[in-house]
Length: 423
Image 1: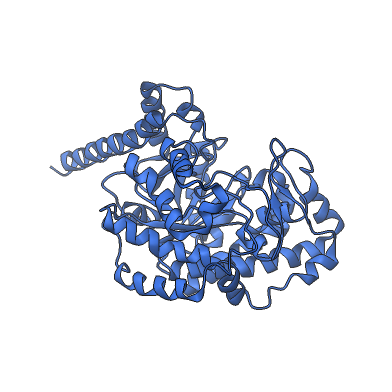
Image 2: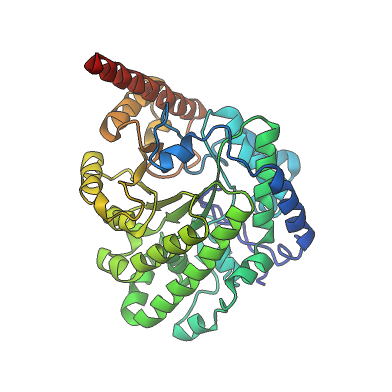
């Protein structure tokens, strides 16, 4: 296990990065998991608010469900106050399942969101493989011991990925039943989303990629070491499947795959290297958990959405650059290729810039336009990229409330039109 390093945040509520301390796994004994499993049996039934589950499955909903990428964390005053009150930094909060549950719950107390998402890191998988992550101020995410070549890829031991996850990530798994219990206790019974970064996003950092420099490192590896890249992506996929599967076993109701670094891989290389591994992840998770919806977000790689529909995901996410109407039309035209037997549901794609400098009126207007473009059914309202920490909570609340209000109005209007036509 690597030595301690500086805490890193890639927005800590579903898209975040923090280095693990050497004692993390050792500090979370097997009794944590045993207790978690006992607690889970009490909370195994479907959540009372199942809007998001139904939307993900393509079922009719009375209003459009909504949650936000990075909904917990630094944009919330209560999060910053909690860190101050506990005397813990970001990394220390992630070490304690009770702290994770508290931070996960904070946005649900402020906003009427229809899901909770595990407060965790996107780089826990490579960290479990002894990849060391730091984030020096102003330099972005840095891996201090990046893979140097094919020999390093060969050395990565993923021969028993299930045991690897149990041994190195018990602190993450133990947090899920804590969250489920908190959701029940506080009468906020919504689905809990588990997640992982996608293989290429992990690879990008593991080979020394950085969004402020070394932006082409992933592409360089594809050119210089294609066989090693394929092996690395395969090894990561195996661990991701086990990691996400064990999240379901501990209480996750849905799963989200984040291809956060999609803009740093070319379309040819995405199709040649990455897509087959994303399909493998979907296939294996569906074999194990056929009733658990799978969501995917290829940020900066929207050309992949039709392929991801064909790969077996239930929900694909539109980023802020996506052309809404053309995406809907394209997915609809190729829905016969979808293993789920229908067009995928959509997620997204409100631009968070309106939550920083907008007004409640502007937010409401933009929400109306989004719902008109995407439709209120088979939609999970969300953002086209994660909250950055600069957003006004009042505007975030206006967004959430507007989604519910306008989608209910649209459903009512649709019902009235249908009733008039039948009369």
